[in-house]
Length: 45
Image (cartoon, rainbow, N blue to C red):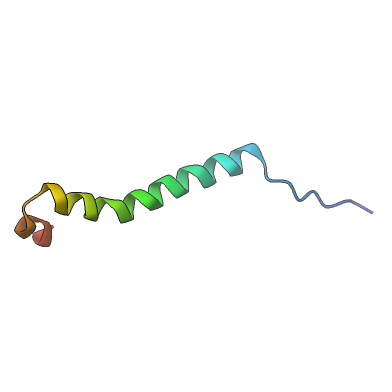
């Protein structure tokens, strides 16, 4: 019988890290934008 390998590969770990950085950037951008920009332009964007 073949033994199933349950380890994560290097590339999968790299892509998980990149995905988490992009995902957190999407949710942090509006908060940072509100502090810097004019509130009216933030609503338009």
